[in-house]
Length: 297
Image (cartoon, rainbow, N blue to C red; front, side, top):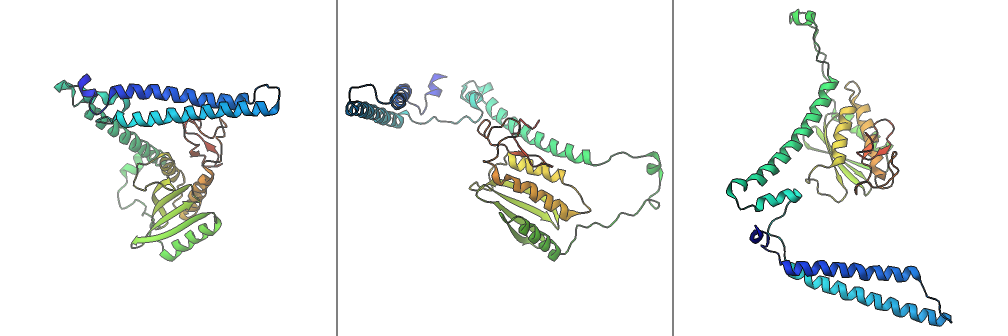
């Protein structure tokens, strides 16, 4: 087991690098302590300044010396032969016993599958809660001839009407850029940009929003979905009014625009800007107030 873990890593240099990190932290601490204490009591102002500058220069030189030593050792450490995306469970792949070797790959596959299952189960639950599945005995017994005719759907709307609705929404929010494309005929694709914070792709069928993907301003659009994309999908399920699709689009764009101050608005419950390194990514559907994902529950 030890031989497998040593592949690609110089353990002796690694141990020296840890000691160098501790020495560097001590040197940096002395620098800040020197700045905190200020000039010590001396008979003259010139003497105090001279002693302070001398001690400060010595501390900075010590930091520079420790930093150079750490950089030298970092080149000797090397890199591990395999990354472990599941933290300590990744060490299971290093077990030389044959019957335990595939356990890590199976664990990774089960982790991805359970995440997808939870995501799709949440979407299915939200859709089913909005639909009435009750059937009365009279409805089950009626013939097909007596059933009321299905009203015609309003999915097929003129493209000019859709363009006018999107144009009006764009004029309502001058700080939000909306670009409309039609790559495959009549279906519209919107590229929404919120300042330098977020960008979103909204896929539409006529005037009905089919899907949305939200990314950071400099983030790759093909990267893995994040929390804001999940919240936007939930918002699409919340804003459902088939009889007035233009109101749905306007309501969703109003909700999406609330993210323009994502990093400037604190959580309305805990009052913090960051929690576990993340800003408040949830926006209330009615009040648009910001909450952390754990604070909203």
